Image (cartoon, rainbow, N blue to C red; front, side, top):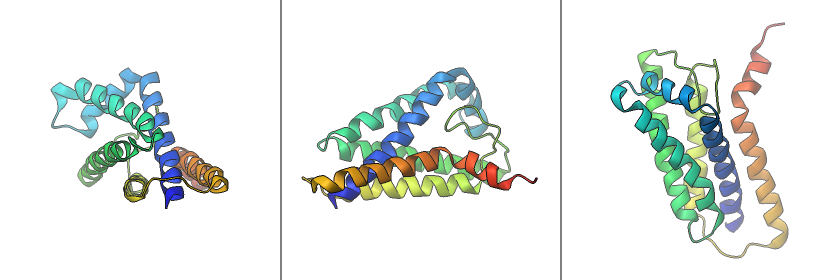
Length: 168
């Protein structure tokens, strides 16, 4: 089970690192998109954007040390729950808000983003529930590589879907 925790930490940590960095690279664009996703907070959109980015940036360093990993998985789970609720509400209202999870995008939020967040939330919960300890040395590299490969697929999900959805 230690290997599950390592794989989940690599996956969740990399996804949150990419998300935080992409938001910081175009913070004004991200902050400007928040009111469309969370219309109940129009006057506090910038504050919500700052808090979101700061909490996302906090997750990866927390996941590095076994003693702080449960807190990192907990922060990730809370954020993913909030993101999923906001996305579900936007989809239910029929809002065609662009997904700015990993930087500027023209891809509107939809069911695949809910599935993506469900996978990430599952990984955060599995990581939090997996015991710490010293895993077998050979397994660490495999677990870390699997987590990192999964993170790359998740971050690239919209691009992958677009690649296969295009008509020739």
